[in-house]
Image (cartoon, rainbow, N blue to C red):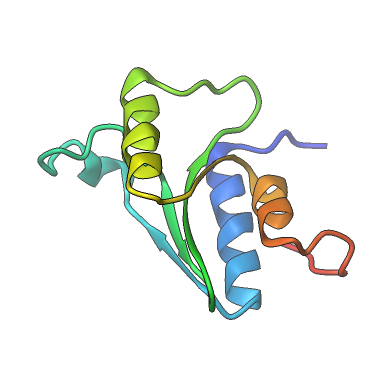
Length: 103
């Protein structure tokens, strides 16, 4: 069995959100360094029918960088939500565990 990668985790989240009728916005890694003030910005911004949330995708032994920790703190201070994890984290956040929804 193959271990999940950052890319496969993002694709699983994109499929899940699409299946649920939401939108998964992805900021490409290559664009982040060129945007002023974007250091640490999360990988995904999910827009569901009644909620939105940033997702910092982490798999295996991945750790948050200091810039990511700062971004998450700023977002929380503004009342926003940020998840750190993989598709299972998103499933848990959306409360769809056990409903037969597959990524």
